[in-house]
Amino acid sequence: MITTKQKVLITGGGSGIGLALAHKFLAHDNTVIITGRNLAKLKEVKEELPQIHIAQSDVTKAEDVIRLVAKMQETFGGIDVLVNNAGIMNFIDTGNESNDLQKQFDEIEINYNSPIRMLHHFLPQLKKSKSGTLINVSSGLAYVTFSQAPVYSGTKAALHFWTQAIRPQLKPHNIRVVELLPPVVDTKLAQDADLKDDTFKPMPPKELADLFWKGYIKGKEEITPGLSSQLKLMSRLAPKFIFNQLNKQPIPNK
Ligand SMILES: NC(=O)c1ccc[n+]([C@@H]2O[C@H](COP(=O)([O-])OP(=O)(O)OC[C@H]3O[C@@H](n4cnc5c(N)ncnc54)[C@H](OP(=O)(O)O)[C@@H]3O)[C@@H](O)[C@H]2O)c1
Image (tube, rainbow, N blue to C red; front, top):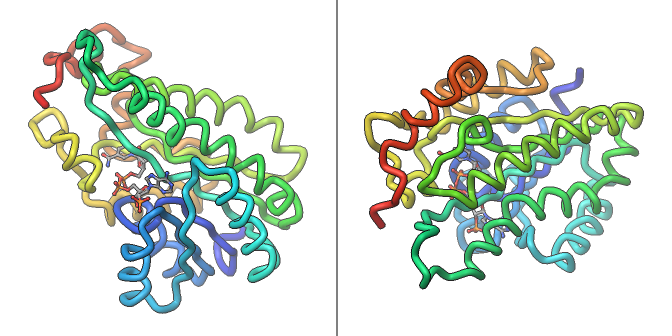
């Protein structure tokens, strides 16, 4: 398995987990391109890490993705590794009739439809690469659903199943499919969601990236750092117990 001198594209790489993964790939002598909607944020990263490449691109917009594919082809002759990392988490009380329905559909668009869109458009480049790799960042919540973020939980479970389903299909094309299922990680997403209670001890992004790398270079297909490995095990051994543990408070405060 080749883990250096690869061209690695990370969606949502301007902050949090994506940025920590970017640091890791850079430290191992890879070319790293990060994307996001907020150009100012990407430029700030570029100031600190001049060797990184940045591209403003919204994963939900087909025209942005198509433009990005062309840019990667033109500038780098294509990518080797696609990291589908961009994602959001909304806290929703489904029993509230005044919920914003569009906001819920947007969450599905970013978290689930966009990884499918990204792979669809980058497939020719990954096929052409000698070491094509797809890395999907789902969540430990793909194993045990979290009532306070119901749409999020659904998208991550869907992403998990999609990832498993496409793995044997992409194997004949020599594209390796890896899934990173993080536990609660100390990022803006987790801060916005206010997950910092005793049940969820947030892991620093750097520690997550270290654990990811350990699994990645060992050739693991599903990487489950920290609490995520317990969620995986408990979802099989005692699904009701672990569901109840995670959902003592099913309605969000905010
Ligand atoms: N933090 C956790 O506890 C945790 C746990 C499990 C899984 N995860 C997953 O890890 C991934 C990264 O999350 P994070 O915790 O690092 O959160 P984060 O710091 O908020 O990062 C999310 C990134 O996604 C980008 N993004 C959002 N919408 C986008 C869009 N439409 N197009 C392009 N980029 C977009 C954001 O940049 P812009 O706003 O500039 O676009 C941001 O850089 C997500 O898929 C999340 O579900 C996180």
